[in-house]
Image 1 (cartoon, rainbow, N blue to C red):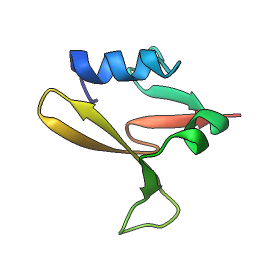
Image 2: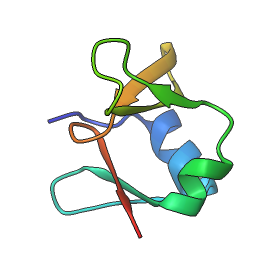
Image 3: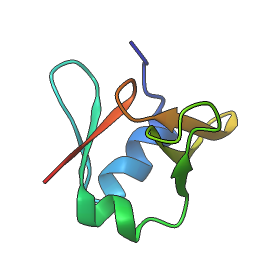
Image 4: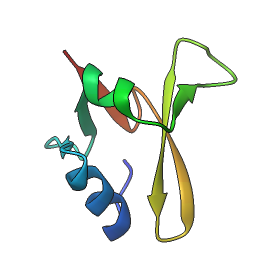
Length: 71
């Protein structure tokens, strides 16, 4: 599973997101929809994506693997 670096964690906490016991990022549908850097996978349009900053630059993460949306 993904290990979150300090910048990714800071960005998530600043936006009111949280991590579950398996280190999966958890956010609400409202939080996801209000975020500027969202989209869909080019390989599977049913998989949503989220871009967040990391210590290495921009990081693209995928729903069902790195994050989930509640509510």
